[in-house]
Length: 158
Image 1: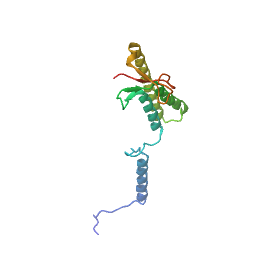
Image 2: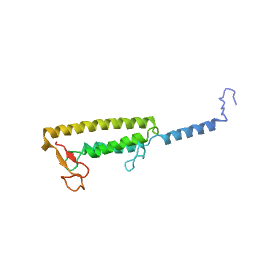
Image 3: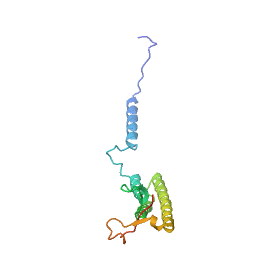
Image 4: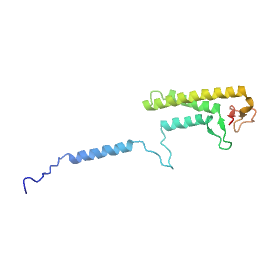
């Protein structure tokens, strides 16, 4: 064997280090957030809970049109209830959330509360200006449309 041939030196800990790196990478992949597939639900976590309640509040604030009429349906009572539930969640979980979760919840609540005030003010102004342009309906399942059980639902003009 010639003296100028490369010599191969294998460190005895090489295999252990490679295995440790492999396990580290595997753990990183397992810990990274995974996007649910089309037939899967998102993970049941704080973000999903806040998102679900925020969606209910937004729906009540007219963010989604009625699929039958295409008009904005505003349910201030239902929206207020969802916002209040988020407030209870914030209060009861204080000190138990990650800084990111606490910040997200605070931002969502602030935005929803501002929108609620804006929409309620807009409805009040619209009703003062032209009461006939706002249709007030009873809630589904209430005794009558004239005496809604849990507050009115409003249909805003196009």
